[in-house]
Amino acid sequence: PLRVVIDQKQDDRSTAQNRLMWMWLGQIEKKTGTDKDQLHYEFKKKFLIYIYRRDDQDFAEMCHAIAKVKQSEPDEYETIGKQVIRLCSTTKLSVKQMTEYLNYVHDFAVTQLGVHLTVPDDLKW
Image (cartoon, rainbow, N blue to C red; front, side, top):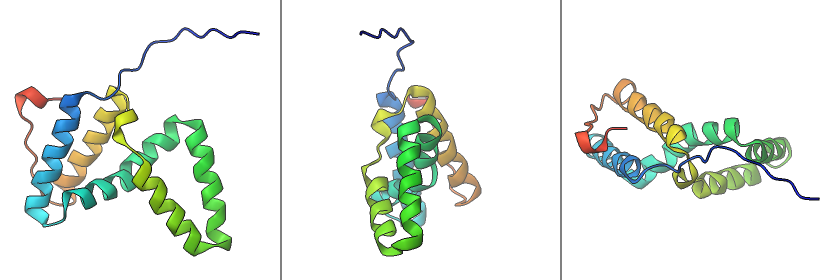
């Protein structure tokens, strides 16, 4: 049997959104001294995982399975968790999801880090 699904195509995040994200990470790095790759990892852990868990049922089930490891094997849980975060990427986000992610990064930078982030006209999301 065949199954045909017709749905709206979700556009992947835009190149402007990607450039804006890396520009902001650079601005935060200058203000805090934290390497932008480390910031990217921390923001993925803090915000991206939440978006994937909410919007991707398979990803949510995987996270649930990993969480079960926490009770019996805490060291392995930490290793697996770090690997999942490292492998998660913003490249698969839709434009809408990437906008949400950028809003989280922006708000965190302003409220928690006291870093004012610039938004050039050509990169407005």
